[in-house]
Image (cartoon, rainbow, N blue to C red; front, side, top):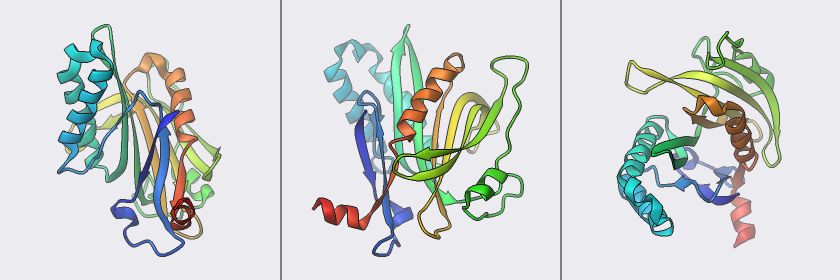
Length: 230
């Protein structure tokens, strides 16, 4: 796994000494990582794709399609207060095969009431409802469980097939999705939400395995970490 990314965006702007000042996650080196800031995102995507085409000339015929697909991912990321965005976009049988991973920072919200919730694992588990599998393999379903992240501790995870609403739109699309809710250290009300998804419903198990591997690299960055590195 390569492509390490450290972030220190607006959600961390008021951090005090000793507080979390960013997050860190690693994606495969073949994934696309780009700046999600609205001023620079389009240029960042064009540059990233151009560099990838330079390394893999066989992608040249699909350069425009890759840029369009990644711009769509970026638009959705900006609407979700995302601090990190990484995307897989491969061409298979002349069609883009896409997956995305977003990290956002928010306060815990009860899925039923819409109200803020404490960030304890029991509370998070109680606010996320499982969905029983349907009759067809592509029907929505959801598991809810507690997982241990090697460098971030215990977290709550949902995984399965879900209908995802498109921001500012009445439409939705069905996708394989994994969301991992990682409480901030100490008594912070914040939660890091790692959301990974793909429309490739036929690849549900291998994609969930990939998302699990990537999410397992997540960690919080403290100011002391930067002082140690310098």
